[in-house]
Image (cartoon, rainbow, N blue to C red; front, side, top):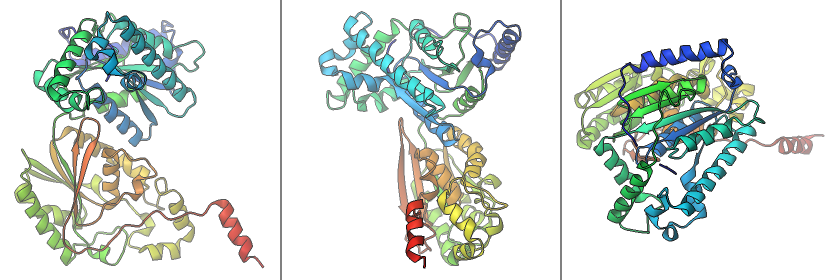
Length: 485
């Protein structure tokens, strides 16, 4: 959350939707009549810069982390560049005088912060120009119009082809409860303060830092900043104002921001109890619970009776028999139990009902292909993990919107959900260990997610298959030569 500079939010006389439609019509009219000099508006595959705007303790870095994780999860390569981290690398705040360092009249402090912003921009530019990634998130306060114009000019430099498309996210908040919660959770554990002062001293210093930014803050304005694309997220998502959305990535960003949940809650994940197919090692199918699986369902009820989940607990289950049986045992502790087909296990196609031994014997070539790239491998007439991620995106959006939820589903499905919250990449996702008869409790934090696993003392088979060692081309050929006559 960094580095620069509040005014009151202007009154809105029109709905967000009506204004968004009006602004998009304006954009199309301008392009059609040759009034838009930015050719990147007409291109589809354009690098995108997402820039945060707002005072400290308004949730900017929280949004940055969640957005980066979401875009990477859906397959859009994204990296965040936090100007505060650059600043911490080049200067010692003990020497800079804490909040005085952020005073706009502190010439030395301003010079250092500008240099750090420039370094972050240049790294961001190299990241996008090299095609290492498709989206860069510029995480800074960007609270003055001058600073934002500097960023836009950098992204539209003449040598860039195509030029970077810029979208601003302004987090506006005047709710004291949310602000105080952000200060308490984030800033007292910030590297700026941890080990340097007490929590009370840190809070006092940080409040003074915010005042320094307020003296220069110029909010985004639909008239003064008419040429910019942006969204205002107001009071942690209670309302939004959207202006000039341009392109697929910006649309996805708006969709995500309108669903994220900023308040405390927990998400529980569990596989169904052990099934009859689990016992004999068969893939997929729709078998019922084993005797041990039924025991797990009863113990799961006892767990949630003692868990005392604040507010209502919602249960979402797949429609497979083994999951429905598990979820149905919990009806007495749930406000709602819903059965979603989208939570069904990955479709193994022609391999449904086979054991891994059967799979390898019948389809040896397919078996090897799957081991080479498990994330992208698609079962013949079935699905891949990549397909599963696309299928589960609406579930992720609902999990971001809801309070406390228990998801009763299957190994591959829960791997995808867990990978989203734990920020795991595509290589790690298909090999995450999600054992039977275990509750995984996720507690989203400001910059991470706390993950706790509660293993129940009820026997179950181990269905985990570790990532196999795939020999390199050289090793494979060396082996062939050794065995050749």
